[in-house]
Image: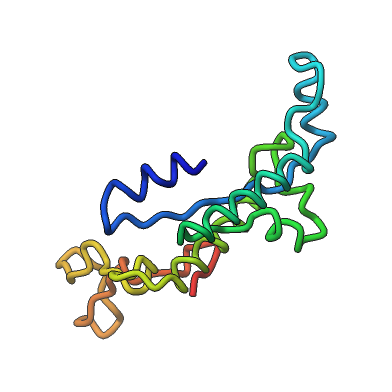
Amino acid sequence: MKKIATHLQGLSNTTRIIFLSCPLVDEVKVRENTRLTFSELVRTNELGRIYSEACIELCNEMGIEVIDLWTAFHKHDDWLTYFTDGVHLAGSGSKIVVEEILKVLKEAEWEPSLHWKSMPTEFSEDSPYDLVYSDGKTTLNPSDWTFHREIQWD
């Protein structure tokens, strides 16, 4: 893990890095899905906890932003529903990851900021093809719309 972090940091002084720790896994589903392939369970929550703690410690030592998915998932009583097969995230699990990434992007003291509100909108200029308000003059630029997002970002 340290080799990966060191390599990424060495790419550029402006490279932004965020590591994600392991989330929990649904050991029952993992066992069901791998029992014909593996003689023992290779993804356990105990191993994930150890890896997550090591990841967080390394990132703190190296000044790398880290997202503690282990703890983020633990905050939810229904975390077992966040997986499709015990390991891979369903939509509900992905929402947790997105929320945690957005927190880091908002709070990170990076110049320029990578938080979505501080970034310019691609194709934000008005176009003759934009929708027109009922006043017949003002255009409605779809680049400014956020209502279609399932997660309302702040």
